[in-house]
Length: 369
Ligand code: NAD
Image (tube, rainbow, N blue to C red; front, side, top):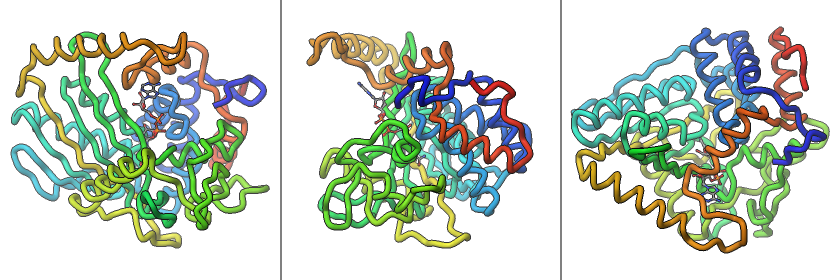
Protein backbone atom coordinates (compact mmCIF):
# COMPACT_ATOMS: atom_id res chain seq x y z
CA UNK A 1 0.00 0.00 0.00
CA UNK A 2 0.98 3.61 -0.28
CA UNK A 3 2.28 4.26 3.24
CA UNK A 4 2.92 7.99 2.81
CA UNK A 5 1.68 10.17 5.70
CA UNK A 6 -0.62 12.08 3.30
CA UNK A 7 -2.69 9.01 2.54
CA UNK A 8 -2.46 7.21 5.86
CA UNK A 9 -3.40 7.24 9.48
CA UNK A 10 -0.66 5.55 11.49
CA UNK A 11 -1.55 3.84 14.72
CA UNK A 12 0.28 1.50 17.07
CA UNK A 13 -0.66 -2.18 17.05
CA UNK A 14 -1.69 -2.00 20.72
CA UNK A 15 -3.95 1.04 20.26
CA UNK A 16 -5.52 -0.49 17.15
CA UNK A 17 -6.17 -3.82 18.89
CA UNK A 18 -7.69 -2.06 21.90
CA UNK A 19 -9.97 -0.01 19.62
CA UNK A 20 -11.05 -3.01 17.53
CA UNK A 21 -11.60 -5.05 20.71
CA UNK A 22 -13.87 -2.34 22.13
CA UNK A 23 -15.89 -2.38 18.90
CA UNK A 24 -16.46 -6.15 19.07
CA UNK A 25 -17.42 -5.94 22.75
CA UNK A 26 -19.96 -3.25 21.92
CA UNK A 27 -21.22 -5.40 19.04
CA UNK A 28 -22.00 -8.27 21.43
CA UNK A 29 -18.92 -10.48 21.72
CA UNK A 30 -17.54 -11.29 25.16
CA UNK A 31 -14.21 -9.78 26.23
CA UNK A 32 -12.07 -12.84 25.39
CA UNK A 33 -13.56 -13.28 21.92
CA UNK A 34 -13.35 -9.56 21.19
CA UNK A 35 -9.69 -9.53 22.09
CA UNK A 36 -9.04 -12.66 20.00
CA UNK A 37 -10.67 -11.19 16.89
CA UNK A 38 -8.96 -7.84 17.34
CA UNK A 39 -5.48 -9.33 17.88
CA UNK A 40 -5.92 -11.63 14.89
CA UNK A 41 -6.93 -8.79 12.56
CA UNK A 42 -4.11 -6.58 13.82
CA UNK A 43 -1.62 -9.44 13.38
CA UNK A 44 -2.64 -9.58 9.69
CA UNK A 45 -1.90 -5.84 9.41
CA UNK A 46 1.42 -6.39 11.15
CA UNK A 47 2.26 -9.13 8.62
CA UNK A 48 1.52 -6.63 5.84
CA UNK A 49 -1.73 -8.33 4.78
CA UNK A 50 -3.97 -5.31 5.20
CA UNK A 51 -6.58 -7.13 3.14
CA UNK A 52 -7.15 -9.39 6.17
CA UNK A 53 -6.61 -6.80 8.85
CA UNK A 54 -8.85 -4.22 10.52
CA UNK A 55 -10.33 -3.22 7.15
CA UNK A 56 -12.63 -6.18 7.93
CA UNK A 57 -14.01 -4.67 11.18
CA UNK A 58 -17.07 -2.98 9.61
CA UNK A 59 -17.90 -6.09 7.60
CA UNK A 60 -17.52 -8.41 10.61
CA UNK A 61 -19.80 -6.19 12.70
CA UNK A 62 -22.30 -6.07 9.84
CA UNK A 63 -22.50 -9.86 9.42
CA UNK A 64 -22.69 -10.31 13.21
CA UNK A 65 -25.70 -7.98 13.21
CA UNK A 66 -27.31 -10.02 10.44
CA UNK A 67 -26.70 -13.25 12.36
CA UNK A 68 -24.57 -14.63 9.54
CA UNK A 69 -21.69 -15.12 11.99
CA UNK A 70 -22.32 -15.94 15.65
CA UNK A 71 -20.56 -14.86 18.80
CA UNK A 72 -19.58 -17.35 21.51
CA UNK A 73 -19.50 -20.53 19.43
CA UNK A 74 -17.37 -23.64 19.78
CA UNK A 75 -16.60 -26.67 17.65
CA UNK A 76 -18.99 -29.57 17.20
CA UNK A 77 -17.09 -32.78 16.53
CA UNK A 78 -18.96 -34.52 13.72
CA UNK A 79 -16.61 -37.46 13.39
CA UNK A 80 -13.61 -38.36 15.52
CA UNK A 81 -10.83 -40.92 15.07
CA UNK A 82 -7.25 -41.30 16.27
CA UNK A 83 -5.61 -39.39 13.44
CA UNK A 84 -8.45 -37.47 11.86
CA UNK A 85 -11.61 -35.57 12.65
CA UNK A 86 -14.38 -33.66 10.97
CA UNK A 87 -15.46 -30.60 12.93
CA UNK A 88 -18.18 -27.99 12.44
CA UNK A 89 -17.64 -24.36 13.41
CA UNK A 90 -21.35 -23.55 13.78
CA UNK A 91 -20.75 -20.26 11.94
CA UNK A 92 -18.78 -18.92 14.90
CA UNK A 93 -16.08 -16.31 14.42
CA UNK A 94 -13.14 -17.85 12.55
CA UNK A 95 -10.75 -16.39 15.11
CA UNK A 96 -12.49 -18.49 17.79
CA UNK A 97 -13.13 -21.62 15.71
CA UNK A 98 -9.87 -21.97 13.74
CA UNK A 99 -7.54 -22.19 16.77
CA UNK A 100 -9.75 -24.89 18.29
CA UNK A 101 -9.56 -26.93 15.05
CA UNK A 102 -5.80 -26.37 14.81
CA UNK A 103 -5.26 -27.41 18.44
CA UNK A 104 -7.20 -30.61 17.77
CA UNK A 105 -4.97 -31.33 14.76
CA UNK A 106 -1.86 -30.63 16.84
CA UNK A 107 -2.97 -32.98 19.64
CA UNK A 108 -3.79 -35.79 17.19
CA UNK A 109 -0.54 -35.37 15.22
CA UNK A 110 1.46 -35.41 18.44
CA UNK A 111 0.01 -38.80 19.35
CA UNK A 112 -0.30 -40.32 15.84
CA UNK A 113 2.57 -38.69 13.96
CA UNK A 114 0.21 -37.13 11.41
CA UNK A 115 -3.38 -35.94 11.44
CA UNK A 116 -6.01 -34.58 9.08
CA UNK A 117 -8.75 -32.21 10.24
CA UNK A 118 -11.70 -31.20 8.12
CA UNK A 119 -13.29 -27.96 9.32
CA UNK A 120 -16.56 -26.65 7.95
CA UNK A 121 -18.91 -23.75 8.67
CA UNK A 122 -16.31 -21.47 10.25
CA UNK A 123 -16.72 -17.72 10.08
CA UNK A 124 -13.96 -15.92 8.17
CA UNK A 125 -10.68 -17.38 9.46
CA UNK A 126 -8.67 -14.42 8.13
CA UNK A 127 -4.96 -14.83 7.39
CA UNK A 128 -4.51 -18.60 7.14
CA UNK A 129 -0.81 -18.23 7.92
CA UNK A 130 -1.77 -17.42 11.50
CA UNK A 131 -3.03 -20.98 11.92
CA UNK A 132 0.05 -22.52 10.31
CA UNK A 133 2.15 -20.40 12.69
CA UNK A 134 0.18 -21.84 15.59
CA UNK A 135 0.97 -25.38 14.42
CA UNK A 136 4.61 -24.47 13.76
CA UNK A 137 4.92 -23.05 17.28
CA UNK A 138 3.91 -26.54 18.48
CA UNK A 139 6.63 -28.05 16.27
CA UNK A 140 4.36 -29.26 13.46
CA UNK A 141 4.42 -28.90 9.70
CA UNK A 142 0.94 -28.06 8.42
CA UNK A 143 -0.73 -27.84 5.01
CA UNK A 144 -4.07 -26.07 4.59
CA UNK A 145 -6.55 -26.03 1.72
CA UNK A 146 -9.26 -23.43 2.28
CA UNK A 147 -12.46 -22.46 0.48
CA UNK A 148 -15.33 -20.07 1.11
CA UNK A 149 -18.84 -21.49 1.10
CA UNK A 150 -21.07 -19.05 -0.79
CA UNK A 151 -18.08 -16.85 -1.64
CA UNK A 152 -17.94 -17.22 -5.39
CA UNK A 153 -15.60 -14.53 -6.76
CA UNK A 154 -13.04 -16.11 -9.10
CA UNK A 155 -13.32 -17.26 -12.70
CA UNK A 156 -11.64 -20.57 -13.59
CA UNK A 157 -8.89 -20.66 -16.21
CA UNK A 158 -10.51 -20.21 -19.61
CA UNK A 159 -13.81 -18.89 -18.16
CA UNK A 160 -15.34 -15.52 -17.25
CA UNK A 161 -18.06 -16.68 -14.85
CA UNK A 162 -17.29 -16.92 -11.12
CA UNK A 163 -16.82 -20.49 -9.92
CA UNK A 164 -14.27 -20.41 -7.06
CA UNK A 165 -13.70 -18.31 -3.99
CA UNK A 166 -10.23 -16.85 -3.46
CA UNK A 167 -9.32 -20.20 -1.87
CA UNK A 168 -6.09 -19.74 0.07
CA UNK A 169 -3.42 -22.42 0.23
CA UNK A 170 -0.91 -22.44 3.05
CA UNK A 171 2.08 -24.49 4.20
CA UNK A 172 3.92 -23.84 7.46
CA UNK A 173 7.20 -25.53 8.38
CA UNK A 174 8.85 -25.07 11.78
CA UNK A 175 12.60 -24.64 11.65
CA UNK A 176 14.90 -25.98 14.33
CA UNK A 177 16.51 -22.56 14.69
CA UNK A 178 14.66 -19.41 13.80
CA UNK A 179 11.19 -18.62 12.54
CA UNK A 180 9.05 -21.01 10.49
CA UNK A 181 8.84 -21.10 6.71
CA UNK A 182 5.39 -19.87 5.77
CA UNK A 183 3.80 -20.02 2.34
CA UNK A 184 0.35 -18.46 2.47
CA UNK A 185 -1.51 -17.03 -0.47
CA UNK A 186 -4.89 -16.70 -2.13
CA UNK A 187 -5.20 -18.67 -5.37
CA UNK A 188 -6.62 -15.59 -7.07
CA UNK A 189 -4.22 -13.05 -8.60
CA UNK A 190 -5.01 -10.97 -5.50
CA UNK A 191 -7.13 -11.60 -2.39
CA UNK A 192 -10.54 -9.86 -2.51
CA UNK A 193 -9.44 -7.68 0.41
CA UNK A 194 -6.69 -6.23 -1.79
CA UNK A 195 -9.38 -4.98 -4.20
CA UNK A 196 -11.22 -3.64 -1.12
CA UNK A 197 -8.09 -1.77 0.00
CA UNK A 198 -7.58 -0.48 -3.57
CA UNK A 199 -11.19 0.71 -3.69
CA UNK A 200 -10.40 2.81 -0.58
CA UNK A 201 -7.54 4.50 -2.37
CA UNK A 202 -4.83 2.01 -1.38
CA UNK A 203 -2.39 0.18 -3.61
CA UNK A 204 -3.79 -0.53 -7.06
CA UNK A 205 -4.23 -4.21 -7.98
CA UNK A 206 -2.45 -5.64 -11.06
CA UNK A 207 -3.94 -5.00 -14.51
CA UNK A 208 -4.78 -8.70 -14.94
CA UNK A 209 -6.35 -9.19 -11.48
CA UNK A 210 -9.95 -9.29 -12.74
CA UNK A 211 -11.93 -10.14 -15.84
CA UNK A 212 -15.04 -8.53 -17.29
CA UNK A 213 -17.92 -10.62 -18.68
CA UNK A 214 -16.65 -9.91 -22.22
CA UNK A 215 -13.18 -11.27 -21.39
CA UNK A 216 -11.42 -7.90 -20.98
CA UNK A 217 -8.86 -7.87 -18.15
CA UNK A 218 -9.40 -5.25 -15.45
CA UNK A 219 -7.86 -3.62 -12.36
CA UNK A 220 -10.99 -1.53 -11.68
CA UNK A 221 -12.64 -2.37 -8.29
CA UNK A 222 -16.02 -1.80 -9.98
CA UNK A 223 -15.50 -5.06 -11.88
CA UNK A 224 -15.97 -6.78 -8.52
CA UNK A 225 -18.19 -4.35 -6.57
CA UNK A 226 -20.22 -2.56 -9.24
CA UNK A 227 -20.66 1.23 -8.83
CA UNK A 228 -18.80 2.54 -5.72
CA UNK A 229 -18.97 6.29 -6.24
CA UNK A 230 -20.24 8.10 -3.13
CA UNK A 231 -20.57 5.01 -0.96
CA UNK A 232 -18.33 3.07 1.39
CA UNK A 233 -20.39 -0.08 0.83
CA UNK A 234 -18.47 -2.76 -1.00
CA UNK A 235 -20.55 -5.76 -1.97
CA UNK A 236 -18.35 -8.28 -3.80
CA UNK A 237 -21.44 -9.99 -5.21
CA UNK A 238 -22.58 -6.81 -6.93
CA UNK A 239 -20.02 -6.48 -9.70
CA UNK A 240 -20.42 -7.83 -13.22
CA UNK A 241 -16.99 -9.48 -13.45
CA UNK A 242 -14.71 -11.80 -11.53
CA UNK A 243 -11.29 -12.07 -9.98
CA UNK A 244 -8.89 -14.29 -11.91
CA UNK A 245 -7.03 -17.34 -10.64
CA UNK A 246 -3.23 -16.83 -10.45
CA UNK A 247 -0.79 -18.80 -12.57
CA UNK A 248 -3.02 -19.78 -15.47
CA UNK A 249 -4.29 -23.36 -15.45
CA UNK A 250 -2.02 -24.31 -12.50
CA UNK A 251 -3.38 -21.75 -10.04
CA UNK A 252 -6.89 -22.41 -11.31
CA UNK A 253 -6.35 -26.13 -10.69
CA UNK A 254 -5.13 -25.48 -7.14
CA UNK A 255 -8.19 -23.29 -6.48
CA UNK A 256 -10.39 -26.06 -7.86
CA UNK A 257 -8.81 -28.61 -5.50
CA UNK A 258 -9.36 -26.27 -2.54
CA UNK A 259 -13.09 -26.41 -3.38
CA UNK A 260 -13.00 -30.20 -3.66
CA UNK A 261 -11.04 -30.74 -0.41
CA UNK A 262 -12.22 -27.88 1.83
CA UNK A 263 -15.75 -27.66 0.42
CA UNK A 264 -16.81 -31.11 -0.83
CA UNK A 265 -14.78 -33.38 1.48
CA UNK A 266 -15.70 -31.47 4.66
CA UNK A 267 -19.37 -31.23 3.66
CA UNK A 268 -19.25 -27.46 4.14
CA UNK A 269 -20.13 -26.81 0.53
CA UNK A 270 -18.41 -25.10 -2.36
CA UNK A 271 -18.25 -21.41 -3.13
CA UNK A 272 -21.20 -21.41 -5.44
CA UNK A 273 -23.65 -20.92 -6.92
CA UNK A 274 -23.99 -18.17 -4.35
CA UNK A 275 -27.20 -17.59 -2.42
CA UNK A 276 -28.32 -14.01 -1.99
CA UNK A 277 -30.35 -12.06 0.55
CA UNK A 278 -29.92 -11.31 4.26
CA UNK A 279 -29.86 -14.99 5.32
CA UNK A 280 -26.89 -15.65 3.08
CA UNK A 281 -23.94 -16.99 5.02
CA UNK A 282 -20.34 -16.99 3.93
CA UNK A 283 -18.17 -19.52 5.75
CA UNK A 284 -14.68 -20.92 5.46
CA UNK A 285 -13.98 -24.61 5.03
CA UNK A 286 -10.47 -25.91 5.64
CA UNK A 287 -8.82 -29.27 5.16
CA UNK A 288 -5.61 -29.32 7.20
CA UNK A 289 -2.83 -31.89 7.33
CA UNK A 290 -0.48 -31.85 10.33
CA UNK A 291 2.86 -33.65 10.25
CA UNK A 292 5.28 -34.27 13.11
CA UNK A 293 8.77 -34.04 11.57
CA UNK A 294 9.90 -36.67 14.09
CA UNK A 295 7.53 -39.16 12.46
CA UNK A 296 9.84 -38.96 9.42
CA UNK A 297 13.47 -37.84 9.76
CA UNK A 298 13.48 -35.21 12.52
CA UNK A 299 17.17 -34.38 12.95
CA UNK A 300 18.08 -34.94 9.32
CA UNK A 301 15.08 -32.84 8.27
CA UNK A 302 16.15 -29.86 10.36
CA UNK A 303 19.68 -29.91 8.90
CA UNK A 304 18.55 -30.53 5.33
CA UNK A 305 15.91 -27.77 5.48
CA UNK A 306 18.35 -25.23 6.98
CA UNK A 307 21.02 -26.01 4.38
CA UNK A 308 18.52 -25.87 1.55
CA UNK A 309 17.22 -22.45 2.70
CA UNK A 310 20.78 -21.10 2.67
CA UNK A 311 21.30 -22.54 -0.81
CA UNK A 312 18.09 -20.98 -2.16
CA UNK A 313 18.90 -17.57 -0.69
CA UNK A 314 22.34 -17.70 -2.29
CA UNK A 315 20.80 -17.56 -5.77
CA UNK A 316 22.19 -14.50 -7.54
CA UNK A 317 19.51 -11.80 -7.57
CA UNK A 318 17.71 -11.14 -10.84
CA UNK A 319 17.65 -7.46 -9.96
CA UNK A 320 20.68 -5.87 -8.36
CA UNK A 321 20.10 -5.20 -4.66
CA UNK A 322 16.87 -7.23 -4.46
CA UNK A 323 17.62 -10.36 -2.46
CA UNK A 324 15.91 -13.73 -2.77
CA UNK A 325 13.43 -14.17 0.09
CA UNK A 326 12.05 -17.33 1.65
CA UNK A 327 8.30 -17.81 2.16
CA UNK A 328 7.41 -15.93 5.33
CA UNK A 329 10.33 -13.49 5.21
CA UNK A 330 8.38 -10.52 3.76
CA UNK A 331 5.76 -10.85 6.50
CA UNK A 332 8.40 -11.00 9.26
CA UNK A 333 10.13 -7.91 7.94
CA UNK A 334 6.90 -5.96 7.69
CA UNK A 335 5.94 -7.07 11.20
CA UNK A 336 9.23 -5.77 12.62
CA UNK A 337 8.79 -2.44 10.81
CA UNK A 338 5.17 -1.95 11.80
CA UNK A 339 5.78 -2.88 15.43
CA UNK A 340 8.40 -0.15 15.46
CA UNK A 341 6.71 2.54 13.32
CA UNK A 342 3.00 1.75 13.71
CA UNK A 343 0.43 0.38 11.30
CA UNK A 344 -0.48 2.60 8.34
CA UNK A 345 -4.16 2.57 7.36
CA UNK A 346 -5.81 4.32 4.46
CA UNK A 347 -7.98 7.24 5.62
CA UNK A 348 -11.06 5.60 4.09
CA UNK A 349 -10.36 2.38 6.00
CA UNK A 350 -9.88 4.30 9.27
CA UNK A 351 -13.02 6.39 8.72
CA UNK A 352 -15.11 3.28 8.01
CA UNK A 353 -13.91 1.72 11.29
CA UNK A 354 -14.56 4.94 13.22
CA UNK A 355 -18.08 5.14 11.72
CA UNK A 356 -18.76 1.55 12.80
CA UNK A 357 -17.47 2.38 16.29
CA UNK A 358 -19.61 5.52 16.50
CA UNK A 359 -22.75 3.55 15.61
CA UNK A 360 -21.99 1.29 18.57
CA UNK A 361 -21.22 4.17 20.94
CA UNK A 362 -17.47 3.49 20.99
CA UNK A 363 -15.07 6.43 20.91
CA UNK A 364 -12.08 6.33 18.59
CA UNK A 365 -8.71 6.67 20.33
CA UNK A 366 -8.43 10.31 21.49
CA UNK A 367 -5.46 11.10 19.29
CA UNK A 368 -5.90 9.86 15.75
CA UNK A 369 -2.55 10.61 14.15
P1 NAD B 1 0.57 -12.62 -1.32
O1 NAD B 1 0.31 -12.54 -2.77
O2 NAD B 1 1.13 -11.42 -0.62
O3 NAD B 1 1.59 -13.85 -1.11
C1 NAD B 1 2.03 -14.10 0.19
C2 NAD B 1 2.98 -15.28 0.18
O4 NAD B 1 4.05 -15.07 -0.75
C3 NAD B 1 3.64 -15.43 1.53
O5 NAD B 1 3.91 -16.77 1.77
C4 NAD B 1 4.92 -14.61 1.37
O6 NAD B 1 5.91 -14.97 2.31
C5 NAD B 1 5.29 -14.96 -0.04
N1 NAD B 1 6.05 -13.90 -0.67
C6 NAD B 1 5.65 -12.63 -0.93
N2 NAD B 1 6.62 -11.92 -1.53
C7 NAD B 1 7.67 -12.77 -1.68
C8 NAD B 1 8.98 -12.64 -2.22
N3 NAD B 1 9.40 -11.49 -2.74
N4 NAD B 1 9.78 -13.71 -2.21
C9 NAD B 1 9.36 -14.88 -1.68
N5 NAD B 1 8.14 -15.08 -1.14
C10 NAD B 1 7.31 -14.02 -1.13
O7 NAD B 1 -0.71 -13.09 -0.48
P2 NAD B 1 -2.25 -12.98 -0.92
O8 NAD B 1 -2.57 -13.92 -1.99
O9 NAD B 1 -2.56 -11.54 -1.12
O10 NAD B 1 -2.98 -13.47 0.41
C11 NAD B 1 -3.04 -12.61 1.53
C12 NAD B 1 -3.67 -13.28 2.70
O11 NAD B 1 -5.04 -13.48 2.44
C13 NAD B 1 -3.13 -14.65 3.09
O12 NAD B 1 -2.77 -14.58 4.45
C14 NAD B 1 -4.32 -15.59 2.92
O13 NAD B 1 -4.38 -16.64 3.87
C15 NAD B 1 -5.47 -14.65 3.12
N6 NAD B 1 -6.73 -15.11 2.50
C16 NAD B 1 -7.69 -15.61 3.32
C17 NAD B 1 -8.90 -16.02 2.78
C18 NAD B 1 -9.98 -16.59 3.64
O14 NAD B 1 -11.02 -16.95 3.12
N7 NAD B 1 -9.80 -16.67 4.94
C19 NAD B 1 -9.13 -15.92 1.41
C20 NAD B 1 -8.10 -15.44 0.60
C21 NAD B 1 -6.89 -15.02 1.15
